[in-house]
Amino acid sequence: MSSDVISTDVVIIGGGPAGLSMAIDLANRLKQKGEEKKIMVIEKGSEIGSHILSGAVVRPKAFKDLLSAEEFEGIPFDSKVEGEDVVMKLSADGALKLPFHPPYMSNEGNYIASLGQVCKYLATVAESKGVEIYTGFAVDEMLYADGKVVGVKTKDTGVDHQGIKQKNYQEGTAVKAAITILAEGTRGSLAKKVIDRYGLQGKNPQIYSLGIKEIWSVPEGNIAAGAVYHTFGYPLNDKEEFGGGFIYGLSENRVAMGLVVGLDYPDPSFDIHAAMQIWKTHPEVSKFLEGGTILEFGAKTLPEGGWHSIPKYYSDNLMILGDSAGFLSTPRLKGIHLAVRSGICAAEAAEAALLKGDTSEKALSKYETLVNDSFIYKELYPTRNMRAVMQDGMVLGGLKMGMQLLTGGACLMAPEVEADCDTTQTVTEFCGIPFTQRFAGKLAFDKKRTFDKVTSVYQSKAMHDEVQPVHLVVNDPDRFQAVNIEQYGLSEAAFCPAEVYELHVNKEGRKSLRLHAENCVHCKTCDIKSPNGGITWTVPYGGDGPEYTYM
Ligand SMILES: Cc1cc2nc3c(=O)[nH]c(=O)nc-3n(C[C@H](O)[C@H](O)[C@H](O)COP(=O)(O)OP(=O)(O)OC[C@H]3O[C@@H](n4cnc5c(N)ncnc54)[C@H](O)[C@@H]3O)c2cc1C
Ligand code: SF4
Image (cartoon, rainbow, N blue to C red; front, side, top):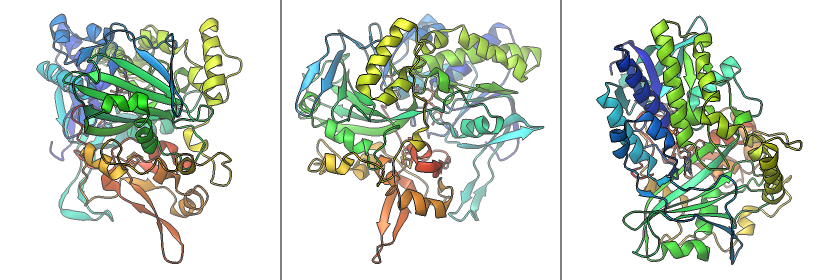
């Protein structure tokens, strides 16, 4: 792309399942009508899939709605889920297998997949229909005219740490579009700006979990392809930490495994990366890894607030899709099929708007009507209070969740939902046993089965051009020093899974922040969890970040 202004009918930011499904479905619809329109997808990863991370157990229905039978057959699912999935409650030295599934967790008829591989395939389908896909371009600016969105601009490159233009400076490209689609996934940085600017927030703040994931190659016989295991309990404290583990058997004797933890925990020293390493040493988990080697590491957040946290997801010339809109079912730990369906709903609304030449908010409200008529509403509305009650702990919250099955989701005792950045307590406020004491003796990692963060970053293949403005912005440095460092003990160092934040203490005992932005794996946790909203994650140069191959 040149630095000139270019024009398109539709620009889609994000080459994940939501953005690519929108592109495919819109291209199909326009072809059927004999209309020629330009559809463009812009993705910050160096390739489609390189920034994609999911479990992933996939519900296939939305893909059947999106693709022809022949196209569906070509999806590179890894294996079909085989047999009953096993759910275990772990204690420090034991495990109890549940005799039933918690509600919504059946995976019958589903497939295990690398979502990155599925997206690569969707991109080839989209391109075969004339969609233009540009990878390695980060979009960091919305364009407005008369207060309305009119497109986006890619990031300027060739700028040093201080913002000074270098010899290789290149201004970003302005992309003017009749309709702009934000499909940036979890905590979209453009979506965040637009939601704030237009006051589109939902009833509750959005809340998130962080998932730490690894792929392993293991000896034959450790796990069958298609096997699905979920755990809850150890090493999490049921009262204050919501979440659990997943272990999925892949083909060629590989395992996908991860620990997903709600970011609404109070302990300022809680470290989800370390918790994942400890989880892997539990006998019911480590048995799958016996004799194996790690292939890949990654981390990403997921939006879990559910129906009441969904913002208004359209405005003049604008629609927000998938995780960026918060379409994710927490009880199922699934968002892929909802992302695809949101893409299909948005494509139908865009088709009507483009053909009428009216892309106003009123015209695009068709998107909301279609979402409410689809399984997105049917899945998310009855579970609307389920994540909120888990702020009461896994046991009491679990009981309240069970009661909602009888009431169609109504709940008189849903606690008020707090944003994740407000739930961390200061070091002195926190009365529990800090994470490092709770797991003293378990935090030395052997680099065979358990890994420190720097080694994990290496396994994610994350790289960043060092000559660029730091993409992690400390919003108010004085306040960050006085509050985030002095009162919270730099909780960013604990929660960041990639050792980007380091607490430096000089000879005089003065504490300060050292940033290793080049380690960032784009999980977005700091943008979400930093106390007082201390950090803003901005998009670094296109092509920077992790290079996932099978996440
Ligand atoms: C640990 C974990 C486990 C999960 N397990 C499952 C599961 O088993 N089943 C399931 O159905 N769902 C699961 N999910 C949820 C699922 O992955 C998401 O709901 C789904 O990926 C959302 O799709 P999306 O297209 O909205 O966003 P994404 O898949 O995140 O794609 C967004 C894309 O936009 C790009 N992008 C973002 N910002 C910009 C920008 N400014 N400029 C250019 N490009 C940009 C990103 O690089 C990315 O490629 C899981 C998620 C996690 C984190
Ligand atoms: S710096 Fe922020 S976005 Fe990057 S890995 Fe750390 S917590 Fe995640």
